Amino acid sequence: MPFIKRDADGKIIALFCEKQADAEEEISVNDKEIIEFLESKDFSEYTNHLLNQSDTAFIRVLEDLIDVLLDKHVLLLTDLPEAAQQKLLKRKKIRKKHIQYIISEEDDDIF
Image (tube, rainbow, N blue to C red):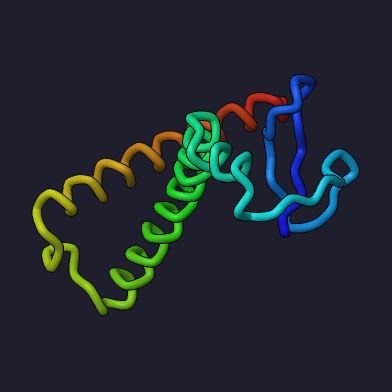
């Protein structure tokens, strides 16, 4: 059974698998309040936020994986659809420019 955290009005604002300092109340997963919380806009927005953060990190992993496959000649850039090629090249260009900016900013602090 999950542990819940409530706001000042007694409304559920968080669920936990384990007891927390501020979430010691245990409640049945079938409880009406749990179902309402899971169907609420706040929970949906939080879930979307977590997924977006995860997507961003996962995109970086995919980029690195594609780079390894390209470097090892397991995959050719031209094997990908044109739209995918353009997106990859655009991201590479942006990342390269961003990294050069960071390095040049750090170099300025040295002197």
